[in-house]
Each structure stands twice: as structure tokens, then as C-alpha cells.
Image 1 (cartoon, rainbow, N blue to C red):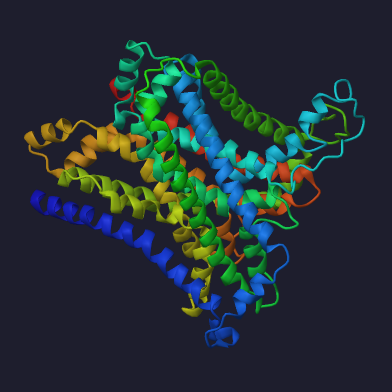
Image 2: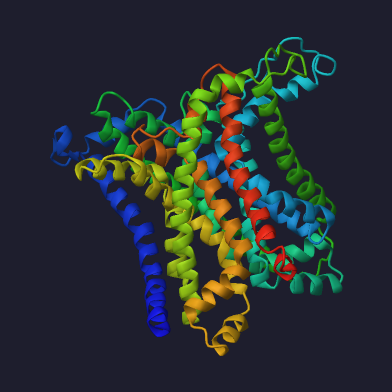
Length: 569
């Protein structure tokens, strides 16, 4: 009986990698194919029965197209470059310091903040009548009325870049922290320090060359996300014209169904812009490598230490402070009864805004919760299956498997989700809960894998060997040894999955066809309106669900392992 259970367990675990590849690759490939056909005039349902370049001609004649393309391209590259620079300088200047320890503790709360909530909070903070201007008015600024500057929505996309950087820094920092042990960063850094190198120079010369290849794909994923983001661009980006991804979503929702052809061409153009941004970044990598290689061995031990420390610490804590102040502003607006400019504090504070929002808030919160739980559960099961398969076969995933893992993050969602919607309609698959869960899982699974893989792979294999020596098979060793030891990392990875799912806007909007209302879709819709109080309520509610997930991830292992102190260290 034990042998049969072991055989069944091994077969189930062996299926996980194939199912994961199918889940990640099939929708992306099918979606791109579904978007390509209408882009060249083929969509019989709408009368497109022959191939044509007419959609591309219509797109080329669209007013403001060049500005859309440039805005998508520049905001993606600039925000990624800024975020990566901040992370690298901070790691170089503050490794092993108190500031580093504190930022690691803040990492989970920072990751729990959905992109839309952070964008809304930043808009409320830095707008002409925002909290920042109120704190300095009228005594320091001299303004008794809101000043005349455009934020958000400036034509250069500066507000959009700021919003993207604030959320990209925690993600890249998490990926860097996961990769540091793999490149023996501590040993390299301490050796360089013992040779007289300053901390920043030691990191840049001894650690970064081996660290960057390990975080290259996460950086590429950030470029793809930043260049094709929809929800943050709708909140912080310009509107005349907007970014290309925002225009695609608007054309898809146009009552004139003939706009679907041009929208398909624009979706493929978004893919081209993202690929161009990635190609330019790759060229930049080669240029930096060519220029930096001679400097790695030039013997300089203290170049840029003061400037690196100042920029690394200042910009990192500026990002954290902006995010924290944004959440404070959201909280105040959600409790404000009357808050005229330039008052720094609303009077009186009231819960009436929450009561007014409650009838619509509860259904949206429940939909968000069930979607997040279902998508995270599916993703976590598949990820654990893949990692357990690695452990049983004593073989790590190769470069091609890693690329598959990042595929949904590297391909702009607007480029393939629209194609999935077309296929969904042609196959008569009704929009609904399960379709949206699978759509969320496309984006949740990579993040869960990235959060859990390092802890899973670093677990001492001798634990499983001890279990085998006591007569336990792989199934019993997994349930009784591996799962208890990895409960905290699994709970943290699941919390990351809940946060990612709760922040999904485009998959919910397109695959759900408006039938599922989540906190994110409501918050983004309200952000373009005039009621800041109601918008703040939904943005904070959107934040509370991931925060609850991280609180459970921290508290649950402590409760379950309260009698096993060694498992809490």
C-alpha cells in the first residue's frame, strides 16, 4: 500500500511541470494568434473575411500615435533604469546595516500595496491640492489656493514614471535578495572589503557582475510591465494622448465593433514597442559591459562611495516615504468629511464614507477574495509540484524552463489577453469566475515560484534522507518533513500570490467581460472621477486584502509551530 501511495505521489508530482508549462505557454501563444488575425483583417464574425492591411493603415492615421509609442517606450525604460539604480546603490552602500535590516522588514508590506492603490495614493499626495502641498501651504509655499501644475497627467509621463518606480523598487529588491546567496555575495563583498575597497565599490566590482545575470529576467519583466501597464497609466499617465496600452483598452471597449481590427493592430504594436525596449536595454547592457570591464581591474578602491551612499540611501527612502505618505493621504481622504485647501488635516473625521461605500464594497471585496484564493491555491499547488519534482529528480530547471516561467511577464498582457477574449467568444466560452481565475493564475504563478523557489531549493536534502532511512517514502517525507519545514516560505509565497491577484486589472476586465467587479476595477474606475473620498475607500480596501494575507503568512507559522521554536528561526 505504501509503495502504491509513493508511486501515485511521484506520478502526480511528475505531472506538475507539464501542467505548468501548458498553463503558461498555451494562453500566451493562443492569445497572440487570436490578436494577430484581426490585425490583418481576418475576423469573420465582424465581416473580416479576407486578409488586409487596412487595420494598420487606420492605426497609422490615428492622431497622436507617435506620442503614444514614445510615451510607452520611454516610461518603460526610464522607470526601470531608475528602479534598478536605486536598488543597486542601496545594496552596495547599506548591506549588513541597520537600514538594510529595516528595509527587509518593510519589504512585505511594500509588496502588499497593489499598483492601483499606490498610484491613487501618489496622485492624492502630489496633486496641486494633495497632502504634500497642504503641509507647506500657505506658510512655506505662499499658496492659499492650489497651484497651477499638472500632476498627475503631465505630458512627459513624469507622474507615471514616479508611480512605476515606487512599486518596481520593492520587486527588484526582493529578486536581488533572493539571488544574492546564489552568487556568494557575502564572501565576494567581504573579500573586496578586506582588500581596502569601499562598500559601494566592493559591491559594484565584486558582486554586481555575478548578481546581474541572475536578475536579468526580472529586470526584463519590469521593462515589459512598465512599457505596457494599463491601470497605473490610466491613473497617473497623460490622457491626450495616453500610453498605447491604455488606448488599446479604450478601442476594445468602443461601441463601434469595427474598432476591434485597429485595436488588434495596436495590441501587436504594443508587443513591438516592448520588444524594442527590451532590445535597447540589451544593447545598453553590452555598452555598460564594454565600458565597465576595464574599470573592474583598475585598482580604484574608493570611487563614488559618498555619492553612491547618498543616492542609494536617499532615493530608496524617498521611494518608501512616498509610498507611506501616499497611504496616509488615502487614509485621511477616506475619513474626511470636509477638507478644504490649504488645511493640512480634515475636520471632522468620520466613517460615513465607508458606510456610504459599503453596499458596493462588500460584493467587490468578496469577488476579489475568492478570485485571489482560487488563483493562488492553483498556482501554489503547481509551484510546489514543480519544486518537489526538482527535489525528487535532483535536477534544477534549465534556462528554457526559466524563460517559460517569465513568459506571461515578458509579453505585454494587452497583446495576448485581447486575443484570448476573441478565442473565448469563438469557442463559446462564457466569461465568468473560472476563466478569470485562470487568467489571474498566469500572472500569479511566476511570482509565487520566484518567492518560494530559493527557500525550497536551499532546504537541506539530508532531512529527506533521514526520513527515507526511517522507512518513509517521498509522499510521507513531503507531508511530514518538507511541508512543516517550509510552512513559512510557502505562506509568504501564497501571500505574494494573493497580493498579485488582488491587483490584477486587465485580466479581470477583459476575461470577465465586466461581469466580475473587484476592488481593483472599481478603484481604477473611480480614480478618474471627482469623489476622492470614495476613491480612497476603495483603494484602501484593495490594500487591506493583501495586508491580511501577509499578516497571516507571518502569524500562522508562529501559531502552528509555537511548540517547535527551532522552526521559527
